[in-house]
Length: 386
Ligand SMILES: [Zn+2]
Ligand SMILES: [Zn+2]
Image (tube, rainbow, N blue to C red; front, top):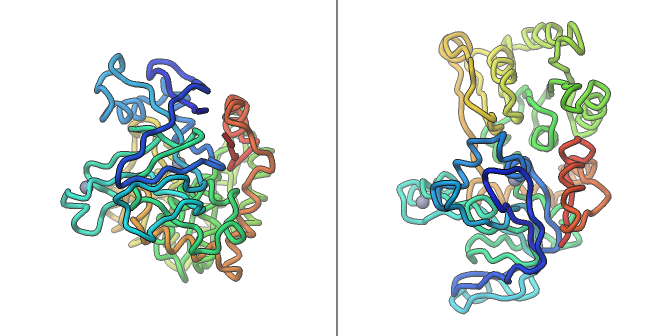
């Protein structure tokens, strides 16, 4: 079958093959024919592995432990497709051949303390398909039956077509982050205008945030100049943002000062809930400066390397701020909430998210072009098809 693999952890790039054996199915597994998949930041990090030492180390945890013992895996974890085979021990009626499905790609152990106390999403033995083991950028993927999410129950293809089904994993991250912030009736700042920031904006709007700020840092050297950022901000407004600020002082002098002044005028003297969706070093200090006393900072973005500075005294202790990491999706509360929100016409979530999906579908064999479209910020959510 066709598959996109990470051949080596010492070099950038990926390898497309047409001669990958189809994955074997276990008694408790489900085999899915992938219909559409989507590229996310994690896949970009795997592509550019030499610049992401943290990602390289993560990929080695269950795979050799050292770069020269690494066995190439199929990457990709955002996808949807059709069930083609069901393992013989899967409970009857749970999932059927022909069902339109996606899957939670975080595989929890079911035995550790976290798993047994309602926190499977942060299982201490978590393995991620497409990072630690074979993923979904292929014609077929096999997943444990308990991880399968049937989209039939939420209206199937009519309500959640493959162009949405392909990135529910990513949308689930945004939904999880926003829900942990309990944003109804609160002011929200979203840091980062990438796919996660834009999705979080739409979700925060759907869940009743009062005023939504969104910030990003234009970076002309990185192909993300202020014109491109202005385009993203326009999209952010369409998704529900009220105020957009470029925090790059050189590109847009005075904007950061204006942002901080406006934020200080909010009732609590700052923002209730900050959603850090970028992983950019400068954003953490912006989060600390913008959050109100007693507010919350939720962290979904992953910095490329350890932060050089964050003023915990000024931005966390003296402000009595709660800082919290968000990982994956709650299994499976996030999925139910997300799919109901998407299926609800009146949430307007689907109509808003439509603006993030690229029209073009790129074949897996043409992955270089797809990755370049995302890297160059030409596309936000790009669909790959085997
Ligand atoms: Zn992802
Ligand atoms: Zn566990």
